[in-house]
Amino acid sequence: DAGVTQSPTHLIKTRGQHVTLRCSPISGHKSVSWYQQVLGQGPQFIFQYYEKEERGRGNFPDRFSARQFPNYSSELNVNALLLGDSALYLCASSLETGREKLFFGSGTQLSVL
Amino acid sequence: DQQVKQNSPSLSVQEGRISILNCDYTNSMFDYFLWYKKYPAEGPTFLISISSIKDKNEDGRFTVFLNKSAKHLSLHIVPSQPGDSAVYFCAAKKETSGSRLTFGEGTQLTVNP
Image (cartoon, rainbow over all chains, first blue to last red; front, side, top):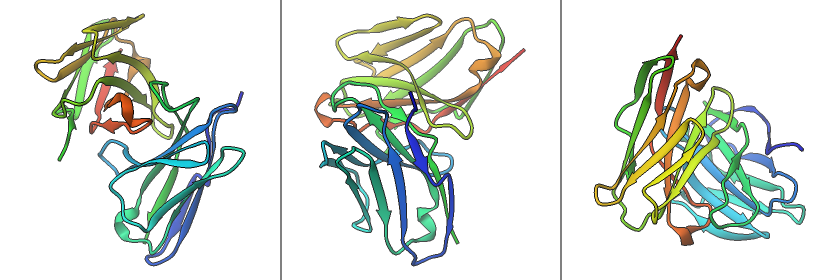
């Protein structure tokens, strides 16, 4: 079975632009979470979606938004990009939303110039 | 406010010896703790977890110890192997917080042959 897949793997944008990152969870997993990892730091929680509903939101500005589709795939959108948005964006999936371990994708490396 | 801290950015050990990675947390509401391993260009991979009702959990070469009074956990790897060389992240969550993990900054473990 395929693991969590994310696209694109790398992306270069300029300040003020908009970006959409995509994630396909492991088959059968209904929960998708997004994390931001800045160089030298641990991943930081952005969003969780379960059964297409937002179940949690981290301390990120409204420029960040996400959604989950009926097939449980997900998109993360970031508007008005800032230099500080440069990071590795990780998607994770799990069966449900309790103590199940998260399975992470390899991430999308976003560079904002 | 860094609620989960890994104070050692790096650790180097000899193959066959024990590796001990440490993690401290400040939020007493955390009741579930996990360790993830990350290789370059890959997403974090789940290693081992422990509930706050336990003080030890073992899985093969990996053992996690939890000291709730000190708000401290550690990961022991015995014996260490060169393939264990990676960044290790400690993470914590509240049972009711779904997939919202709070990660530490990570420790780069290098196991020398």
